[in-house]
Length: 371
Image (cartoon, rainbow, N blue to C red; front, side):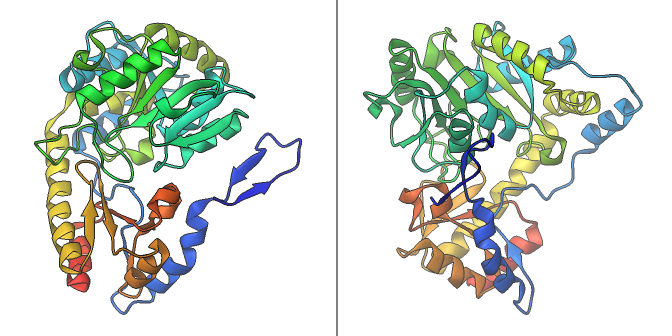
């Protein structure tokens, strides 16, 4: 990953080049296709927000006052109720609304007090913002296949991500239990990005939350889990997400975020309550993604692609056994844009990430071009 050095006094310090800037020429090439562009490169939802959520947002829009960082009791209870249904966690779990999950990932190391001389571990094939969070805290950004390999580093925070973006990998209960045990033995905060938890496609490998008592024996000490409504409920534009886990850590983060003003807008809080309390729209959305996944996977395999992992989430981790940029170019000639695996780490250099977040018509068009 290429880095640029900013002015030494800049709070940004050293940050990687924004990856999607490198994709622009291929997007232009794909857009020149006679039938137009089919963009499968990003995970942005394209389906309408459910009416029950929009209604709640509109009804709350007239309130003029400031929201609170923690949100009202009803908001927090809606989050806890959803977590109990989907992770099995007990009622004592602490929760904290966040302004989307990306700001949480980028800010969590600094807000936990991680700093120079410390290290933040994250998966070697991963969403790029884990590294950004470490860099903004002036800590060592440590991509690794397993955080337990970080011997000799002053590791303070370890991110895990199951189901994984971009690969769609999932972890077993046994693997998660081993990570929890290791993190506690080494005083490392273990943060699990679980934004795709409800989008498992393989019945033999169901996604499991780090909050599940089968993983942590009912003890949340040192554990955090991040969740988002961007995928489940198509609320990317609402910036609605939350953190859950260790009450002591959540309490500290709440105080920091109160001082810094990380407030989810009041109307979005009300919309989130409606979204969390309604499962029908989420089931319908899941069925849409499942149908698109079936169509794209079959088309990619017919075109000679191999599909690795991809047991859960909104992406197919596809390969032609060549440099990912060559594959991006091959797809662009057919008017299809995919994300090069290199964006997610050196280990992704022979894969592309193909998103399921396109309309049914766009997915059908992509499948026809691949066929």
